[in-house]
Image (cartoon, rainbow, N blue to C red; front, top):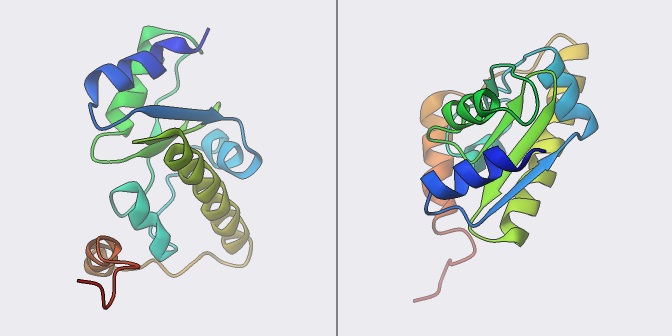
Length: 143
């Protein structure tokens, strides 16, 4: 039933070879509350920006849901799906699975931070710097 957004993402995003869609607990809680995940942790940069967006609600399996997902994924590799769940993309299945697990981890951390007054949000320039450093991470001294 939910094949459409998988197909549309892979058709319109040539860098994507895998889509993982889950109803994981914390990502789904935030999706039900329609809460975008801000830059509460530097690892948010792994998803392509300073937040993970929530797409607009549409019934599962519909073209409208696919359209909403594609909009939330603009410039991003993952999103929450309002009142539904989450999805993560990657150039391979292992990378998409890693992204889905990392997104659930950040969602859990953000949820718990909200319970104690909310997290301190990192500035956009910090997230940009982190994103740039990801390109050379693990390559120090090689060359």
